Amino acid sequence: PPQGNPPFGTVTFDPMGGLKADTDIGNGVTIGEAAKFVKTNTPFFTRLFHQINSFGRSRFSFVGFLFHGGWMLYRKMYKLGTIITAFMALMIISQLFIGTFYTDLLTRLTEATANVSIYTASNSVAVMNEFLSTLDNEELIVTGVYFFSAFAQLFIRILCAVCGNRWYYKHSIRQITKIKNNAGSKEEADTQLQTKGGVNSALATSLIISYIVLSILPSFF
Image (spheres, helix red, strand yellow):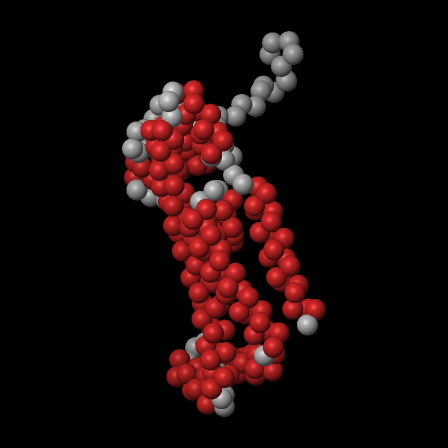
């Protein structure tokens, strides 16, 4: 190798994932513009955006499953991220409240579900009906809220995992198009793509801290 280069060659980084900068990924938006807007993890998202535009296929998002609305806020999808985060926070708070003030009910529920057979549907229904028959009206409502919260959280996680990348693609295309239409020059558009795109790390850190606080809060009661 030429003098000054590593003996095993140089490591190069392609922010556009091997695609040409002028490749259209929808509505006149190019790969190069998307890379400037995304800013972080650009090879993955530029290839993904091209795949969605060309074949209509997205990918399962494990980040969306784990962090749902928080990931969307991190990616500056503020409207949708706020709705999902607020809903998930409400579900988590409801479960924490029930876990703190209805510990006896949850203990009985755990004992009842431990006797439920996963192989016999009729037995499962019979056991749960017997358990529910022992509850008063308040306990029935609390049990319903507890199960609804658990299933709602799982549903939202799966929804964000399946649709999250496609939502981010549509968000990026919409924002890039808006920036290009409102900018007075290409240089101004490039600057706004850099400033209005990317991620919001401070908000993501705040959400993580808030989640930790919510998780340990019941231990003080």
